[in-house]
Amino acid sequence: MPTVSVCCIAYNHERFLAQAIDSVLMQKTSFDVELVLGEDCSTDSTRQIALDYQRRYPDRIRLLLPEKNLGVMGNFLATLEACTGTYIAIVEGDDYWTSPDKLQRQVDILEQHASCTTCIHDAEEFMDDDSKPPRLFSDKYPAALAKHEKEITQGDIAEHGWFIPTASMLFRRSALFPIPQWMHEAFSGDYTLHLLLTRTGNMYYLPEVMSRYRVHPGGIMSATQNERIIARNKKQIFETSYYKQMVDNRYHGRFNEFLEGLHFDQSVRLKQGGNTLESYYNYWKAISVVSKPRTVSHLKQLAYQWYKKLSGK
Image (tube, rainbow, N blue to C red; front, top):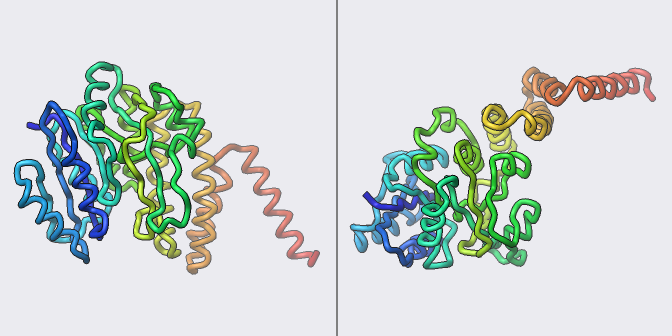
Protein backbone atom coordinates (compact mmCIF):
# COMPACT_ATOMS: atom_id res chain seq x y z
CA MET A 1 0.00 0.00 0.00
CA PRO A 2 1.53 3.35 -1.02
CA THR A 3 1.85 6.25 1.39
CA VAL A 4 0.44 8.64 -1.23
CA SER A 5 -2.05 7.94 -3.99
CA VAL A 6 -2.24 10.66 -6.62
CA CYS A 7 -5.75 11.05 -8.03
CA CYS A 8 -5.70 12.24 -11.65
CA ILE A 9 -8.68 12.45 -14.00
CA ALA A 10 -8.33 13.07 -17.72
CA TYR A 11 -10.69 13.71 -20.62
CA ASN A 12 -9.52 15.11 -23.97
CA HIS A 13 -6.25 16.24 -22.38
CA GLU A 14 -3.90 15.03 -25.11
CA ARG A 15 -2.05 18.39 -25.10
CA PHE A 16 -1.62 18.47 -21.33
CA LEU A 17 -1.56 14.98 -19.83
CA ALA A 18 2.12 14.18 -20.33
CA GLN A 19 3.09 17.30 -18.40
CA ALA A 20 0.77 16.35 -15.52
CA ILE A 21 2.13 12.78 -15.35
CA ASP A 22 5.76 13.90 -15.57
CA SER A 23 5.19 16.29 -12.66
CA VAL A 24 4.09 13.31 -10.54
CA LEU A 25 6.93 11.07 -11.67
CA MET A 26 9.53 13.74 -10.79
CA GLN A 27 8.54 13.74 -7.10
CA LYS A 28 11.42 13.02 -4.70
CA THR A 29 10.08 11.20 -1.66
CA SER A 30 11.15 8.85 1.10
CA PHE A 31 7.91 6.88 0.64
CA ASP A 32 6.03 5.08 -2.12
CA VAL A 33 3.78 7.07 -4.47
CA GLU A 34 1.26 5.68 -6.95
CA LEU A 35 -0.54 7.57 -9.71
CA VAL A 36 -4.17 6.47 -10.14
CA LEU A 37 -5.34 7.81 -13.49
CA GLY A 38 -8.98 7.72 -14.56
CA GLU A 39 -9.20 8.19 -18.34
CA ASP A 40 -12.84 8.91 -19.23
CA CYS A 41 -13.18 7.65 -22.84
CA SER A 42 -11.60 10.66 -24.50
CA THR A 43 -12.25 11.34 -28.17
CA ASP A 44 -8.63 12.30 -28.77
CA SER A 45 -5.36 10.46 -28.01
CA THR A 46 -5.50 10.96 -24.22
CA ARG A 47 -6.11 7.26 -23.50
CA GLN A 48 -3.22 6.17 -25.70
CA ILE A 49 -0.89 8.61 -23.91
CA ALA A 50 -2.01 7.16 -20.56
CA LEU A 51 -1.42 3.60 -21.80
CA ASP A 52 2.03 4.47 -23.09
CA TYR A 53 3.04 5.90 -19.71
CA GLN A 54 1.58 2.93 -17.86
CA ARG A 55 3.64 0.52 -19.98
CA ARG A 56 6.79 2.49 -19.16
CA TYR A 57 6.02 2.79 -15.44
CA PRO A 58 3.86 -0.24 -14.56
CA ASP A 59 4.90 -0.16 -10.90
CA ARG A 60 4.00 3.52 -10.47
CA ILE A 61 0.92 4.11 -12.61
CA ARG A 62 -2.46 2.40 -12.26
CA LEU A 63 -5.05 3.11 -14.96
CA LEU A 64 -8.82 3.11 -14.68
CA LEU A 65 -10.29 2.68 -18.18
CA PRO A 66 -14.10 2.68 -18.11
CA GLU A 67 -15.88 1.33 -21.16
CA LYS A 68 -18.24 4.31 -21.31
CA ASN A 69 -17.92 7.97 -20.34
CA LEU A 70 -18.64 8.54 -16.65
CA GLY A 71 -18.70 12.32 -16.71
CA VAL A 72 -16.49 14.57 -14.62
CA MET A 73 -17.97 13.79 -11.21
CA GLY A 74 -18.42 10.08 -11.92
CA ASN A 75 -14.83 9.73 -13.07
CA PHE A 76 -13.51 11.82 -10.19
CA LEU A 77 -15.28 9.79 -7.52
CA ALA A 78 -14.38 6.45 -9.12
CA THR A 79 -10.73 7.49 -9.24
CA LEU A 80 -10.79 8.80 -5.67
CA GLU A 81 -12.29 5.56 -4.40
CA ALA A 82 -9.56 3.58 -6.15
CA CYS A 83 -6.87 5.46 -4.20
CA THR A 84 -5.60 3.29 -1.36
CA GLY A 85 -2.80 5.43 0.05
CA THR A 86 -2.72 6.85 3.55
CA TYR A 87 -2.74 10.25 1.87
CA ILE A 88 -4.38 11.35 -1.39
CA ALA A 89 -3.08 14.15 -3.61
CA ILE A 90 -4.92 15.60 -6.59
CA VAL A 91 -3.69 16.76 -9.97
CA GLU A 92 -6.11 16.97 -12.88
CA GLY A 93 -4.95 16.08 -16.36
CA ASP A 94 -4.72 19.70 -17.47
CA ASP A 95 -2.79 20.99 -14.43
CA TYR A 96 0.69 20.13 -13.19
CA TRP A 97 3.08 20.39 -10.24
CA THR A 98 6.21 22.51 -10.36
CA SER A 99 8.18 21.39 -7.31
CA PRO A 100 9.78 17.92 -6.98
CA ASP A 101 9.55 18.27 -3.17
CA LYS A 102 5.83 19.02 -3.06
CA LEU A 103 4.58 15.65 -1.77
CA GLN A 104 7.41 15.17 0.71
CA ARG A 105 6.84 18.61 2.23
CA GLN A 106 3.10 18.12 2.50
CA VAL A 107 3.31 14.67 4.08
CA ASP A 108 5.87 15.99 6.56
CA ILE A 109 3.49 18.82 7.49
CA LEU A 110 0.57 16.48 8.16
CA GLU A 111 2.80 14.13 10.13
CA GLN A 112 3.68 17.10 12.33
CA HIS A 113 0.16 18.54 12.61
CA ALA A 114 -2.24 15.83 13.73
CA SER A 115 -5.10 18.33 14.02
CA CYS A 116 -4.99 19.05 10.27
CA THR A 117 -6.61 16.78 7.69
CA THR A 118 -5.23 18.55 4.62
CA CYS A 119 -2.20 20.45 3.38
CA ILE A 120 -2.49 22.99 0.55
CA HIS A 121 -0.18 25.57 -0.99
CA ASP A 122 -0.17 28.59 -3.28
CA ALA A 123 -0.40 28.09 -7.06
CA GLU A 124 -0.23 30.04 -10.29
CA GLU A 125 -3.27 30.38 -12.52
CA PHE A 126 -2.51 30.83 -16.21
CA MET A 127 -4.42 31.10 -19.47
CA ASP A 128 -3.54 28.36 -21.94
CA ASP A 129 -3.76 30.83 -24.83
CA ASP A 130 -1.68 33.48 -23.00
CA SER A 131 -4.56 35.94 -23.37
CA LYS A 132 -3.88 37.22 -19.84
CA PRO A 133 -0.74 37.24 -17.70
CA PRO A 134 -0.45 34.54 -15.02
CA ARG A 135 -1.40 35.39 -11.45
CA LEU A 136 -1.02 33.77 -8.06
CA PHE A 137 -3.99 32.44 -6.13
CA SER A 138 -2.72 34.40 -3.12
CA ASP A 139 -2.97 37.61 -5.18
CA LYS A 140 -6.40 36.65 -6.52
CA TYR A 141 -7.75 35.71 -3.07
CA PRO A 142 -5.67 37.80 -0.60
CA ALA A 143 -8.35 37.73 2.11
CA ALA A 144 -8.17 33.93 2.25
CA LEU A 145 -4.57 33.06 1.31
CA ALA A 146 -1.91 34.87 3.30
CA LYS A 147 1.78 35.31 2.51
CA HIS A 148 2.68 33.16 5.52
CA GLU A 149 1.89 29.68 6.81
CA LYS A 150 -1.49 29.37 8.52
CA GLU A 151 -4.33 27.00 9.29
CA ILE A 152 -7.59 27.36 7.34
CA THR A 153 -10.86 26.38 9.00
CA GLN A 154 -14.19 25.25 7.59
CA GLY A 155 -15.52 28.67 8.55
CA ASP A 156 -12.90 30.31 6.31
CA ILE A 157 -14.02 28.12 3.40
CA ALA A 158 -17.69 28.88 4.02
CA GLU A 159 -16.97 32.61 4.26
CA HIS A 160 -14.65 33.00 1.27
CA GLY A 161 -16.01 30.35 -1.12
CA TRP A 162 -13.75 28.61 -3.63
CA PHE A 163 -10.15 29.78 -3.34
CA ILE A 164 -8.09 26.58 -2.93
CA PRO A 165 -6.05 25.39 -5.94
CA THR A 166 -7.17 21.82 -6.61
CA ALA A 167 -3.71 20.62 -7.59
CA SER A 168 -2.35 21.87 -4.27
CA MET A 169 -4.38 19.44 -2.15
CA LEU A 170 -2.99 16.51 -0.18
CA PHE A 171 -5.23 15.04 2.52
CA ARG A 172 -5.69 12.10 4.84
CA ARG A 173 -7.82 9.42 3.20
CA SER A 174 -9.44 8.72 6.55
CA ALA A 175 -10.79 12.30 6.69
CA LEU A 176 -12.92 11.78 3.56
CA PHE A 177 -14.10 8.19 3.48
CA PRO A 178 -16.76 7.02 3.33
CA ILE A 179 -17.72 9.58 0.68
CA PRO A 180 -21.37 10.66 1.16
CA GLN A 181 -23.71 9.40 -1.54
CA TRP A 182 -25.10 12.85 -2.33
CA MET A 183 -21.70 13.94 -3.66
CA HIS A 184 -22.40 11.88 -6.79
CA GLU A 185 -25.05 14.48 -7.73
CA ALA A 186 -22.94 17.53 -6.88
CA PHE A 187 -21.41 19.91 -9.42
CA SER A 188 -18.28 21.07 -7.63
CA GLY A 189 -16.14 18.14 -6.59
CA ASP A 190 -13.33 20.29 -5.25
CA TYR A 191 -15.37 22.74 -3.15
CA THR A 192 -17.38 19.83 -1.77
CA LEU A 193 -14.07 18.21 -0.81
CA HIS A 194 -12.96 21.39 0.94
CA LEU A 195 -15.99 21.37 3.23
CA LEU A 196 -15.97 17.61 3.80
CA LEU A 197 -12.28 17.52 4.70
CA THR A 198 -12.65 20.30 7.27
CA ARG A 199 -15.40 18.53 9.20
CA THR A 200 -12.82 17.01 11.56
CA GLY A 201 -9.76 19.24 11.19
CA ASN A 202 -8.17 22.25 9.55
CA MET A 203 -6.15 22.75 6.38
CA TYR A 204 -2.49 23.73 6.70
CA TYR A 205 -1.49 26.35 4.12
CA LEU A 206 2.02 26.77 2.69
CA PRO A 207 2.63 30.07 0.82
CA GLU A 208 5.03 28.46 -1.69
CA VAL A 209 3.92 28.10 -5.32
CA MET A 210 4.17 24.40 -6.20
CA SER A 211 1.59 23.89 -8.97
CA ARG A 212 -0.01 25.60 -11.97
CA TYR A 213 -3.75 25.81 -12.68
CA ARG A 214 -4.56 25.92 -16.39
CA VAL A 215 -7.60 27.77 -17.73
CA HIS A 216 -8.69 26.68 -21.21
CA PRO A 217 -11.91 26.50 -23.28
CA GLY A 218 -12.41 22.79 -22.59
CA GLY A 219 -12.35 23.16 -18.81
CA ILE A 220 -15.34 22.25 -16.64
CA MET A 221 -15.94 25.89 -15.68
CA SER A 222 -16.25 27.05 -19.30
CA ALA A 223 -19.88 25.99 -19.92
CA THR A 224 -21.62 28.57 -22.11
CA GLN A 225 -24.68 26.92 -23.69
CA ASN A 226 -27.95 27.75 -21.97
CA GLU A 227 -28.93 24.09 -21.44
CA ARG A 228 -25.58 23.31 -19.85
CA ILE A 229 -25.84 26.30 -17.52
CA ILE A 230 -29.36 25.25 -16.48
CA ALA A 231 -28.02 21.77 -15.64
CA ARG A 232 -25.10 23.30 -13.77
CA ASN A 233 -27.37 25.63 -11.79
CA LYS A 234 -29.57 22.69 -10.79
CA LYS A 235 -26.60 20.77 -9.42
CA GLN A 236 -25.25 23.83 -7.61
CA ILE A 237 -28.63 24.44 -5.98
CA PHE A 238 -28.70 20.78 -4.90
CA GLU A 239 -25.18 20.75 -3.45
CA THR A 240 -25.58 24.08 -1.64
CA SER A 241 -28.41 22.66 0.45
CA TYR A 242 -25.95 20.04 1.72
CA TYR A 243 -23.22 22.63 2.28
CA LYS A 244 -25.55 24.42 4.69
CA GLN A 245 -25.95 21.21 6.67
CA MET A 246 -22.18 20.90 7.12
CA VAL A 247 -21.33 24.40 8.29
CA ASP A 248 -22.18 26.44 11.36
CA ASN A 249 -25.46 28.40 11.22
CA ARG A 250 -23.62 31.72 11.19
CA TYR A 251 -22.44 30.99 7.65
CA HIS A 252 -25.87 30.10 6.25
CA GLY A 253 -26.46 33.66 5.09
CA ARG A 254 -23.66 33.45 2.55
CA PHE A 255 -25.03 30.24 1.05
CA ASN A 256 -28.57 31.66 1.03
CA GLU A 257 -27.39 34.66 -0.99
CA PHE A 258 -25.69 32.28 -3.42
CA LEU A 259 -28.93 30.30 -3.71
CA GLU A 260 -30.85 33.52 -4.34
CA GLY A 261 -28.60 34.35 -7.29
CA LEU A 262 -28.75 30.80 -8.65
CA HIS A 263 -32.54 30.67 -8.52
CA PHE A 264 -32.85 34.09 -10.20
CA ASP A 265 -30.52 33.02 -13.00
CA GLN A 266 -32.31 29.68 -13.32
CA SER A 267 -35.67 31.43 -13.54
CA VAL A 268 -34.53 33.63 -16.43
CA ARG A 269 -32.93 30.77 -18.33
CA LEU A 270 -35.91 28.44 -17.90
CA LYS A 271 -38.26 31.15 -19.13
CA GLN A 272 -36.08 31.62 -22.21
CA GLY A 273 -36.37 27.89 -22.81
CA GLY A 274 -40.17 27.92 -22.53
CA ASN A 275 -40.39 26.23 -19.09
CA THR A 276 -42.75 28.82 -17.60
CA LEU A 277 -43.96 26.96 -14.52
CA GLU A 278 -40.50 25.89 -13.44
CA SER A 279 -39.31 29.43 -14.11
CA TYR A 280 -41.94 30.84 -11.72
CA TYR A 281 -41.01 28.24 -9.10
CA ASN A 282 -37.35 29.28 -9.21
CA TYR A 283 -38.34 32.94 -9.05
CA TRP A 284 -40.32 32.26 -5.89
CA LYS A 285 -37.41 30.32 -4.39
CA ALA A 286 -35.10 33.22 -5.23
CA ILE A 287 -37.20 35.88 -3.49
CA SER A 288 -37.90 33.74 -0.42
CA VAL A 289 -34.59 32.04 0.35
CA VAL A 290 -32.71 34.80 2.20
CA SER A 291 -35.11 36.36 4.73
CA LYS A 292 -38.67 37.59 5.21
CA PRO A 293 -37.72 41.28 4.80
CA ARG A 294 -35.94 40.43 1.55
CA THR A 295 -39.04 38.51 0.36
CA VAL A 296 -41.28 41.50 1.13
CA SER A 297 -38.89 43.81 -0.69
CA HIS A 298 -38.89 41.60 -3.80
CA LEU A 299 -42.70 41.33 -3.75
CA LYS A 300 -43.04 45.12 -3.51
CA GLN A 301 -40.75 45.55 -6.49
CA LEU A 302 -42.71 42.95 -8.43
CA ALA A 303 -46.04 44.60 -7.58
CA TYR A 304 -44.68 47.98 -8.67
CA GLN A 305 -43.49 46.53 -11.99
CA TRP A 306 -46.93 45.01 -12.60
CA TYR A 307 -48.57 48.35 -11.71
CA LYS A 308 -46.36 50.21 -14.20
CA LYS A 309 -47.14 47.66 -16.90
CA LEU A 310 -50.92 47.76 -16.33
CA SER A 311 -51.07 51.52 -16.04
CA GLY A 312 -48.84 52.10 -19.04
CA LYS A 313 -46.43 54.26 -17.07
